[in-house]
Amino acid sequence: MPIRSLLERLAAGEILVSDGAMGTNLQERGLTLGTAPEVWLFENPAEVIRLHRDFIAAGSQILLTDTFGGTGLRLIHADLKESAAQVNRRAVALAREAAGNADVLVAGSMGPTGQLLEPLGELAPGAAVDSYAEQARALAEAGADLLVIETQFDLGEATSAIKGARATTTLPIVCSFSFDMGHRTMMGLAPAKVAKAVSELGVDVIGVNCGRSLSENLDNLKEIHAAASLPLWMKPNAGLPHMGEGHRAVYDVTPAQMGEQAAQWVAAGARIIGGCCGSTPEHVREIARATALIGQV
Image (cartoon, rainbow, N blue to C red; front, side, top):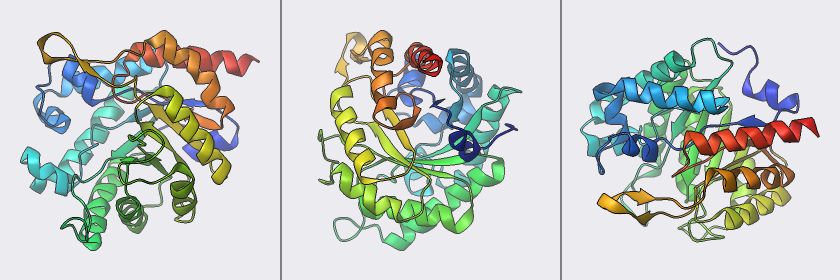
């Protein structure tokens, strides 16, 4: 187990490097488009472990588990609904195996359920809370060091996720929103609004992940920083994808370009930085190199 917790490391003033993308990297390594990444926890665990280790070798100090779609509500589409707890426990175990004796924190990834809450959809808030609670409990019991409620776009769902996690564990919670409309989430939420709302729910870190461009996400990070006094998380996409040969998603932001931006994220208040969709171990390596240089200043 790591000597120091996330909150201890943040309190000591560290700038931490997270990992890159799970789904797009597994697709590059053979995961079939349309197949839930969680399936590989059982069908190809060696590749999940290899990806974790590649991120560690690149400089990651935080590994997100392969559980972005790990709520029972979302696992329905992968025929794994009845195995939700097992899925999450398995993912933590593989991340721990990959980390070995390295001083690396394992973060339980908790993404959207894939359903809209009432009244826009059919999902009752209580059912969402229960599903997130089940996931959080399994991640915590398996030994996760923190929970990352990520790629959120609706305050109702983010609130359900936070309530579910808080009902079952005392682990530190990161809550990160995706502003995939540029400077608004899909539901039209501005960064300042989500920052204020989520801060009041007792999370430990708030931030930005996914999104459209590095410049827009930097704007969003700055707005969150002005509205909230919490440590900030920054994990943007490597740009928006376009289709390459063989219907392969291609992301145009290079590792060097992402590394060049990392200092601006830290200057804007980010304490944990990494990459989302399209971000490879090479992207993380450049981010880690930039972070090391910041520490020398």
